[in-house]
Image (cartoon, rainbow, N blue to C red; front, side, top):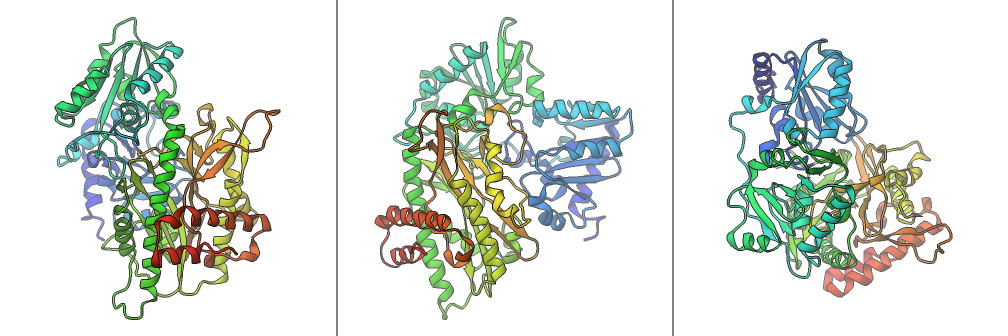
Length: 603
């Protein structure tokens, strides 16, 4: 592509024109919005609009002369392709949390210059790090300028979708109860008021759901809790009159979305405001005149710990999801083997057929993320997504990776499985087996209650490290309850832990080690697990936890080399398959039931 006429190049030039007009040397464009969400409404996909890179996480830095995108290893192959012809440099960083863009700015921006960032989409904690790092290099940070707003005149409007109540049996805890829990935590912290901007916290707290963000049943809003009343700042028309009356009966009153800053600024002088520096933007935090207490949102901790009633519904959702996958995979294997089929199955076919199978299950709402159906080399890109313009047909020999999930009214699912297409080589089976050993190792782990979740990461990596292998993404993320497929505070990953990441009963987390060989294939084996009290352990050394594997779907043993598994690992796999068969068989019949029995046969 001619870099002079590529859309990204022209957009970068328009941003550079704004920088020169404002007297700024550079701008930092994060992948963020006013709620610090992982998945962004179109209005705040500024980094994607400017660069053309569609991955979910990256930071774009534009100076008056250059542009660079900072992305971790999950996205290197994708970024190389999507940045081609744009003139934007790809800077490879080790982890999503790495701050190489700040070092790059120090090396490429003169002392005494000003760097802009939109404070309304920058977290308070991240802003402090940015300001301190740049200050050491003699650079001033300006946070009151939205450079993209000027350069992007056709920016999309706010999403208009309606908000609805999460009610019935799948919502076992009343809104008033949750508000009372958070107010008790506020009082313990010495706060009279509490600002919540993270959309999944708000959805959980108020038992509401929406559709403002793709794949996540959330809506754009802020909440300000006082001693007795709660204000929900939300767009006009998103909540109908009947729901507004229901909310009012629980002391929740509506206000315009854009009025949150003035409400925070108007808090009385004797108020004490609790806010989470990792989950509140610099722009909102700086409007507060009241005394501030900084701590994790109480709702973030509370929603991570699923109750027994919620866990019961999650188990039911896993059965429905497992039945849907059995129906899909039975169809898939039959179609692959059909000599009369004229058109090949593609990665896009897989996405559509999986969604179709899930849509027939009770309680299904939609996918929980964009399905990753990746054949051979495409599997080496951890966040690959097939498109009509670029996708593979499932023909020939190789490894197929399918990472998919769904939203049910009683839970959220996320699963990755490997499938053999044609003939597999010894190296492919070896890779799958080694990764599976990592999944098994962590799945069987017992650990003291309160263990910081990042400490568990090495357990899944150890079988890979034995062979000098590794992967660049985290091993596990928290999962919401009919909410975001990625949530915290727990994270089984190579990050610096803090006390909020302690493992507690009721947390649901993924276990998903992987291995990626660019240009050849990728491997990932993922289940969701629930923290439960460890059975048969005394209390002399305190309470221990273990994992209950929630995900129900066969792990295709044709992809593995049983000779590389120990006897105890084979026993785990056979035991898991026995559980899968017992729980899914009552909901299946015919070809689907026969397929389940075949794929769960012991080895």
